[in-house]
Figure 1 (cartoon, protein in one colour):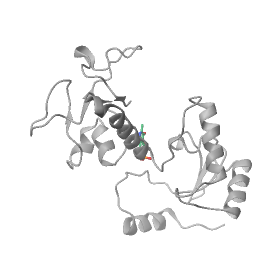
Figure 2 (figure 1 turned 30 degrees about the vertical axis):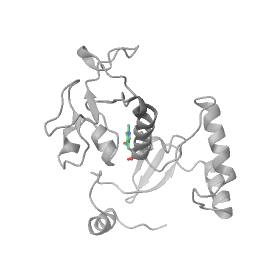
Figure 3 (figure 1 turned 60 degrees about the horizontal axis):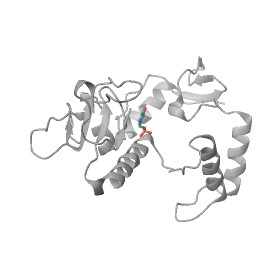
Length: 209
Ligand SMILES: Cc1ncc(COP(=O)(O)O)c(C=O)c1O
């Protein structure tokens, strides 16, 4: 099967895709198990996690068959309705992870972070004492809340983030309390000193790592 060359694919991206991700100069066209092939026919061993989406490797026949079978029956129904596969998937995940808990399905890591932030606020706002603690050097995604939670200066240059305080107890210039606090990664195994030497005084509703 013939493919576009890397230069042709890159040109397509340069002309049509916003460059918000830095990419390696490789275009993959095929995968099998732990191996990937690029547009020039080079084979690679895939040591990337696929951000959790390709843990079973590439194109395992059972996965391919399941996807093909479902796609031939029903590809998409929005969240206004019920579907059997989504319910069964939630049941399997719950059984194998938190036992008795429930699933929140979303489309990205950033959405998962946003949902965690919202849940922490909903749960603790009525008592007026919640904090969201994140770590310096962390990455949590590109939505507004997730960018704020991300502990890397490079993601804050566009000033799209919420108010954040870099040190426990320190208020940000510009008034108002910080929406979240960012701490060094100095927590102990018991998590007692998640806030470093000074600790976290307020009750923490959410700790993102
Ligand atoms: C720890 C962590 N949280 C959140 C995200 C954001 O995920 P997404 O790009 O799917 O929004 C990432 C992505 O690399 C991540 O590594």
